[in-house]
Length: 324
Image (cartoon, rainbow, N blue to C red; front, side, top):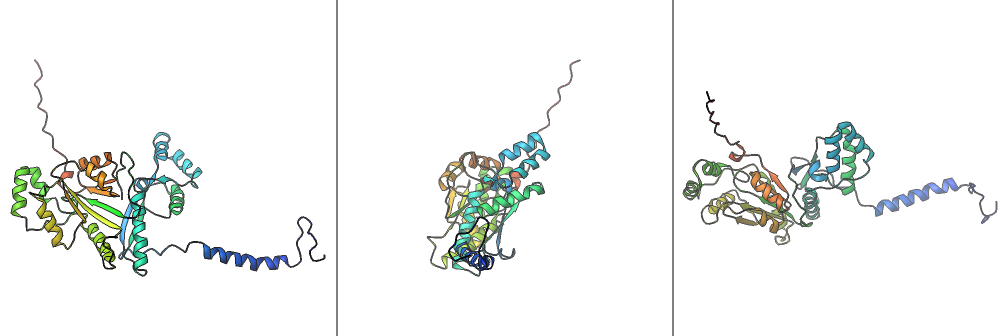
């Protein structure tokens, strides 16, 4: 065959196979250089701030849940297998997790060798066969994902700044003061808080999370980025600033902690204010406030701690003597 002579269908030039291999390797190397670098290695649990998020909070699984409820587990698993290459749609916790990832990116830019970042863990009780679709969805979005309550409507939140709002009593603090309210009423509560203004409250279940957020904030502050910090925290409490707010603030100060904003609502509903703040997540111990946040479009997490979780005892119904 002469050089330049056209090839018949299916025919190859002598030595073509040998020449193809190095060209393919060269092309692959070029592509690999264009492709995104591998994801950062997961930090050790003892070094990271671990966030656990349920699969049904991270992704919308309404249709799948309907099938499970109406048609049973076998049909549910079959449906998931048939659609395992279709990513789930983002759920209510999705923006929260994306904001965590945004903070991680900033932290890794400033501290490349630090493992003091958020480690996000997906928690699910789904059938094992559904795991493939969950993994595919995670890989599709590049994230993994706290069991939370979905809002009644979608509200846009920041994609570059993580915003976390906390209730005070029985969330950041112990339920000491709430017990007084339940047992003796508001007047006694105000007297107690005034008398104990300089005595710090005991810590509540979410104090550690605020502490972790504060530690990460300081990493940005030390680089002169206080105003550009991608983490912002809020205390949103039913306490009154004039009568009981000082003890809450002095407690935070005694712990070496602070929130960027402290909002004392004096018993007013929290939902409308949360709509203005637009946090990615709001923690409260009372379902009344969780429901109010949901109605205004805020993703809210119920903290099952303290006296508010004690079921109310109802007085026994008097039995009316039967007519003779």
